[in-house]
Length: 247
Image (cartoon, rainbow, N blue to C red; front, top):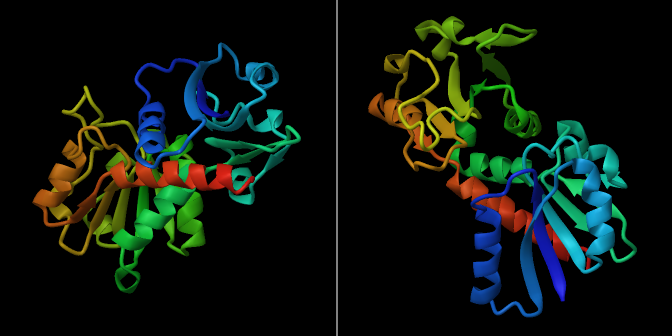
């Protein structure tokens, strides 16, 4: 039996368990199961691995994406640069290696969504853990960006500084905040949406609802839009590939 699972503090409804359980059934993958492991502290990862020797792969969710870093034997280069892990591969000898498939999922879907010939500069809305993966992908795609936050900081704009004139320079907007996520569907980043044009591209990492208020307002101004659902599926498949690359 090969075991996979998700670790986090509170694991109510899990996309990962549903996704992988359905995948195993659909693809006829035998002797494999995906479980949820609620850990009161990230430090209990070592104990979990000792108790579950059949584990070969784990997903990691909040608040442990950063806390697990010092507990792992090795980090993938991108995960080390980002400073967050959402996928762990467990080798046959018990060694653990951390990866960030949020980075993989965002980078691959952005390449398809944001055409090379129109690539300009980006505004990354939010400065949390998801923003770290987004920024690493933008760096690797050579897309210049500025961060936008409610609080001022080095190289960080405040929302009130995003003017209509400024938006003419930044053609890609990436929302990494939870604004607009169910059940708070009436919230959105504070931006001059009327200043957007068909030359703009809006990417919202939120996928529930599929059309957030942020995306609705961007689309109403003629901008191209995409939500986070494809990224979610892509990062899950990237995790599966990483786990199975272990043999």
